[in-house]
Amino acid sequence: MYNKTANYKLTVVIPVFNEEGNMLRLEQVLNDFLRGTEANSCVLFVNDGSTDGGGGLIREICSRQNDFFFIELEKNGGLSAAMKAGIDYCCSEWVGYMDADMQTTPEDFNLLLAHAGDYEMVMGIRTGRKDSFVKNMSSRIANGFRRMMTHDGVEDTGCPLKIMRTDYAQRIPFFTGMHRFLPALIQLQNGRVKQVPVRHFPRVAGKSKYHLFNRLFGPFKDCFAYRWMRKRYINYRVADMNL
View 1 (cartoon, rainbow, N blue to C red):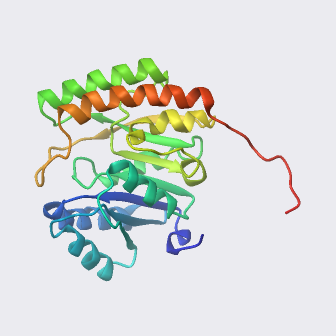
View 2: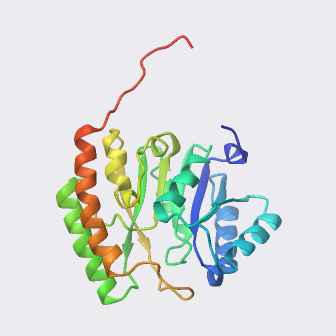
């Protein structure tokens, strides 16, 4: 598959669901990143069936920005589905991921890119998190349980700032909830993962799509699904061919 993202080194995939209030600010900070980074980069919005004005704003932004592109899903499929769609349609060497809620900044992709030559995945660790007590505690509990189950050594898998080598990302077996296990799934392919501190900001527009159940109990169930898959995962490399 070839598309316009093949002309770039990094494609930043941003799943969007009902983030109308953040889109224009997001356009500005992404523009600042694209102009300031040494890596030739583009943005790929994935409209995950938004029902507010966010979908129209995505089209408007992409019509006036040469390095902005979009995919529009037929209906809302959730974060894992939106991420998979973005990764599937990425043809650059590296694919990045960032949430549309503006709680991280694309400027910090430069911190991750500094290590890209030595790792298959580089991800952020949120410092000074600006979330509620309940959200922080539930995240800490879920992260601890996930580390115990996966042994991936990752401190903050929920940090929405990651870059991955596209060929590794496209081999990840995705299903609902598996966005929480991206580092472990890269490691299943013998990929190396680096963690780098990044900044975190309070949400100023829109509403979180996550509550106690899908932030805490959902990941617990997904851990058992990951353990089942890890025991049966097939990993191979082709040594030679004459195709």
